[in-house]
Image 1 (cartoon, rainbow over the protein chains, first blue to last red):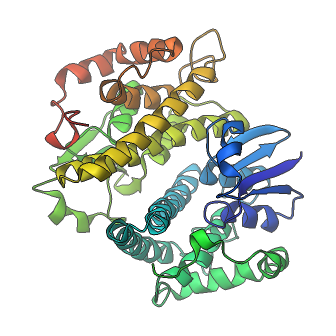
Image 2 (cartoon, rainbow over the protein chains, first blue to last red):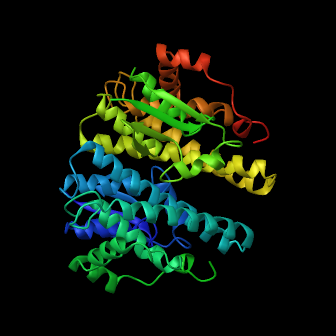
Length: 211
Length: 211
């Protein structure tokens, strides 16, 4: 099984996949595409016209939540019960939806459209607060993971998004001690700690300046 | 097992769930919430602050794609192979993403913000064209369904969204004869045909006027 991740040179929707692949300790290659200078020409090579894409033995699979669930189930970092699996994916989708709102905020910022940037950042803050509160309530087991006695892909996925949003939204995890704990534990996994130290700084498209 | 669907009184992201429940011929109740006069007060009763929600034996599950996949797998209207299941969910997610763009187009229309409405309708048309082309290519079996010799929840889900978008986007299925066929077949299922005849007309929020 060979894995190759294709994504822009930003964190955003690619970072959860990078973290899940590392947490699984599977080998993978990555192609980083500069969103300003390269993506326009590369876009046509992507069947669905979007990234991230994970190539699995040469076949393309897109959509961050789908890729992460596929990897988690393939490599036994998932729950088996279908109802719990659905509730975990529900949570992952709500968190992932915040990234759509954030992407519009970034987009309108580079277009210098202050009004629309504000509109979407308002939506980001509103939705992130709801999602964090609910995720915190999903840590029901004393082991400290989301709806599970062991770490699943959803914990890693959640940590990879929270790692971005804690710097974007003031006080995001102030009332979420269990999520702080998950974020800390996932960041401390050796392969992820190594990545956090090695990864490029934030791309200018996704800095938190003026949000 | 009792099912209760809670959604606004529009089609949008609720309609795929209504169609899947009917295609499965399972009993369910529905509560329709008026998005202008009722939703503001009801919102706080929803854990994640959003609809649609399916109550399964009284427990809430949100997110259209997650609900439909759960129902499809529970009631044997799904493929078993994990890779094919992932590719089908990938397709469902790309189609579902169009509804986010359409929701913003509707929103900016009622705000009389012509420029933003146009921006989001442009995105709707661009993405819908890509998604339709790819879905058409996923009808690989002579049985005429998406990546499967039998109808799955993804066919029903796809038909329920296309049923909305064919009226919104001129010529959407012109070069997609296989999707036209799927749409026709799903619309002809007795329980769905009955619903199409009985359902309320489009809510003013989601008409196609001036899009």
